[in-house]
Length: 435
Image (tube, rainbow, N blue to C red; front, side):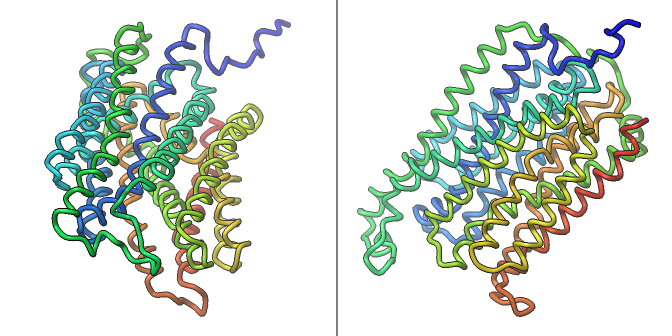
């Protein structure tokens, strides 16, 4: 009997190594944009002297870009190719980043929001193209593992963005200088002093985006020059209506889109409200942000651990197990008060590590290749789900006390529900993986 008949397919075939490495770097690029932008809500609130509600339009613009452009990106790829979609995505990313230059000159908050909106047009193109392209670079049996490997570099970018925001941008904002009583000095200054500080601070906010724009341009040139293997269906006329019907009747896919919405909501809630949870324990924001960085580091390291485990455990089974573990940590976050509760909250990130790429890969596993680009687009649009539940959690936190416990503890019942749904999806799709 030949031994080769039982040989496992390679995770990445030799002919695909270079394109895999290049496309994997893109995952870090959009991770950077996501996590340098989150603290900008607080930065713009002070320097532009606007309300929190107005400042939160930063996130509305950011997630709005994904919602607007995911489907057009998919339709573009169907008519062209993955490489063209990636190049267009990088071009839009760089354009949005460079728009920060005139936005800072004009000192216009609306201009900054438009810049982020254009930038995330690019991110929507990149996510809609890069994820399915990674899945297609090799055997279907290893596709979800391969995507987990590539997605492991997303937290590398996220950590870089958080570090730049925490150690370069926020400490250098003169509008955030406080007096001995903890009050903002900026509020007591006259108009000319405020104008000088505003010019300085908007330049501090602008510079990291311009720098990443230059990095994105370099990646654009490299990917334009390197020959990328075609793994998509070029020029095939496929009826969009027929594709939508196929996707709707594909149960692992349909439930996968819904599960992805709940997962992204949970991820944003966990990472957004670590600071509030720690603040309830008397920990200041700067120190609390360090717990966020630890959480992101756990997500990064466990992504590699999870990807390795998928050599021996089917992705759906591992997703179900990690979903249960995340739910148990969240339950402990709710019920255990004090520092132990905070440690459980940070620990959730270890089990979130494989969720996004695993749900993505499992959902697309049984999708016909002709329907992949549009199917990927709906999974990218599911990111918008992250804008729906965090405001509800914030409203619960504002109540201060719920069920006789701190409201911030009780508010984590929302991520708990989300992780239960993720665990159920993993259990549900184990049956489909065997077929």
